[in-house]
Amino acid sequence: MTMLSPPRILLSLSLAGPPHDRRAEVQFDDQPMKSRHIRLSFKSQITSRFNEPRRTPCLRFPLILLTMISSVFNTHSRTSSHHQMALAFTSSSAIHGSLSSSSSFYEQPKVSQLGTFQPLERPQLLSSTVLNSRMRSAVKPLNAEPKRNDSIVPSAATIVAPEVGENIEAEDFEKLAKELQNASPLEVMDKALEKFGDDIAIAFSGAEDVALIEYAHLTGRPYRVFSLDTGRLNPETYQLFDTVEKHYGIRIEYMFPDSVEVQALVRTKGLFSFYEDGHQECCRVRKVRPLRRALKGLRAWITGQRKDQSPGTRSEIPIVQVDPSFEGLNGGAGSLVKWNPVANVDGKDIWNFLRAMNVPVNALHSQGYVSIGCEPCTRPVLPGQHEREGRWWWEDAKAKECGLHKGNIKDESVNGAIQTNGTATAADIFDTKDIVTLSKPGVENLLKLEDRREPWLVVLYAPWCQFCQAMEGSYVELAEKLGGSGVKVGKFRADGDQKAFAQQELQLGSFPTILFFPKHSSKAIKYPSEKRDVDSLLAFVNALR
Image (cartoon, rainbow, N blue to C red):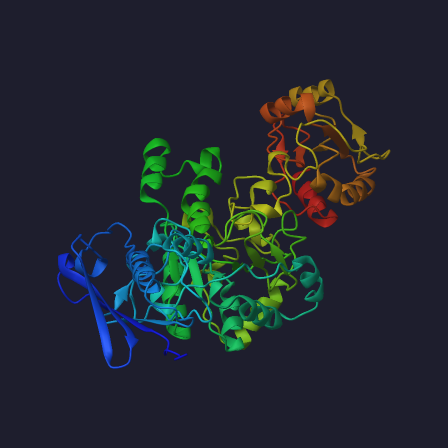
């Protein structure tokens, strides 16, 4: 029996002509020195970004070709019994695009070759329906967002072929965080960049977190940096962005808020509504939503959070964690990993590093600014003040997260409580003979008295609040120190049925709230800081009594 050589099928695409006359040519060679040619013309309009400036419908050209090839094979299979086939694709001109989750081509910078497909040892090709279905299920989307310009995912020009295959095996990041607990920031940064490559980016705010960029630079690995331009940053911050780009030879990927949302907010509530009803709404529009869009193009991100920045909300942040608040490229809970390389580093050590490495810093730091955000919401801090006291200074301790790291707050609705219905589930606290337990009538009497015999320091608390529990030791010690000084120390449980009264009459914004009732004044003075150690509280009392 004479063995025939395997058939050879060559498919060439000609995209050089006008859109209405683009052709695909199939050369089907099943006999030596003899060929059959099949020329198919696509008379339907085929458009792409290189001949039309606006976004056009998705180009399903690859699927059309697969269907055509399958048809050719079906025709050939009736006249040939060959068992081995080879199929190669070539293109006569650059094709713009990248595969989306629906196997369509978005218009992006050029990719020179579609790829090569060589099924071997198969009696026949799969049907076009099966091929189309498998392509849709196997190709991972490069960007889940409908607006490509709003995502910091790398453009298709940097990718030769779409990533195909299953997700990488799940990793125990809690275990990894423990392993890296004593690692240096440089080690952590190197590990993060090694593990996630181009799917990870550094979040840069324009403050001392520039140290992250220096660490990334020192690893010698490629890295990406993005920043949220809220439209209300200080001029010095914009100048730092430019300086950093030139210093490191990088391009920061900026994310901007949705103009329609900003316009609606400003027209409805004015430019400075956050001074009246809190910063959360403005931050949600200008920062949180742009960040959410950015992170949807990543599998991991790197932040400059430190435990000493905000003892109330950041004291337990790990080196690495599954992000509790945002989703990543693959979507769903657990699809984004958050790295905090400097979590265990003190602020003074960060600054020693910046000076030693001659890293460019924000000029606002030399003017007394420590934590830097938007211009209307940031001010310098005085010596001895905590760095976060320069942010949203008109609000209470629990509000000192803008929403970018809201996962640090275990339960936002009740300021980190383990339950949310406003009723007690924990034993009472501040239980000592030196602290007077006040009832609602007792507090009302304090409010009415204009000429008290002695000043009072009163904490408004909820026993289930983790921040109240955290300050119990210092408040009890303070009460002991003030014993015999003429200053009364009291507590008023302000949750449950008393919460509305406390909010209306006692300036309660979050737990704990500390009030000082002066001796010769009816107005209570609210403790403005979130530093609740004995020395800070004692300094507050001594300054007012």
